[in-house]
Image (cartoon, rainbow, N blue to C red; front, side, top):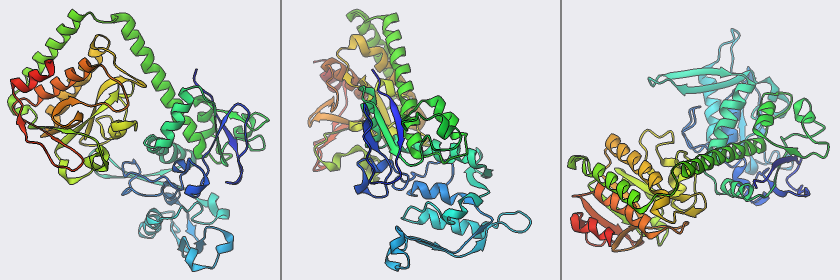
Length: 468
């Protein structure tokens, strides 16, 4: 059974109400110490530079949203973390002087506005009211700067509701999917735990519009995709990040349920394959791989034994040593066609071909479904072959030189597993496919000291090692 996702309004960080039947998840935070879920706070979350609204990355999410707004006039302001610190320069978070951002003809004064915008983007403190709390409603729109398909600049002025959709909810939901605490919430709900997401900008009976009328008199608001969509289009009250967390969870749950249903349908239609059918599918894949021209095959297959932080795939994928490589991770088939952050080496799923990246740096070969590994090739070879075929097409398109993947032991090229317990025949089959894709090239492996055993040429003897 899947758990419920509710929200509950709190006004201060110190509030920790207990809701019967729900596990409290306080997501309102200004500091790490406020809540275990501080990573989900827009005051802590940072952009990755892949947002449609152009920025260089590393921008505090709240500052991206607030700094994209346009006011006719911005006034003198100094922002401090608390009113008791006001006037003490040691605690000054950000300041600005009065200036016009729109001229008498209604045109944006671009140089002045952009200086203000980038000052907020560069600020390392969250700024919720860059023009003062009492002037927050004086914003006349949000300046949305993006690129056309031909690479030329595109400028749009979004209204309040449009900005909620395109600047806030869309990008916030995308970014939090990479966070460990978001994955923890997802796992809680999938295991049947009811969660209460608590922050200030969520429904409450005292609020205006739908933000009040849709809420239970107790203050508990049981969320759904449908009622969150109603709230985001109701401008009578702020739309908080707690609702975005709930929205992302509902989307991912729906996606998971759909994929597991399709997977079960596939199993029901095809059934578990006989051993002869498995051999037939294997032979078809081997024939397909052998048809690849030698010039299109991988030059080096690199096995990585994870036994220290130097072997972390996410660090390696962003380092200078593997710029012409694609990294294989052990995928959950039900999330293969997403760029969701996963556990183990699936943390590099956001670098795959379902992300917005021009050149994918990772690819997932399934070794299981969600929380269990494949127990035989009879149940899994169709899913594995589907993804290996996709992988080969990716190799042809981007012409990578190296494949990097995880191994269990130095000196043995068999693909490793961390989270799942996987049938050995499954692992050997996947490894044999990787070796054949790299036929004629080199195989080498690394340990945490980053020393390498002698490279070996991948020939028939090396490939046949997987048949033992």
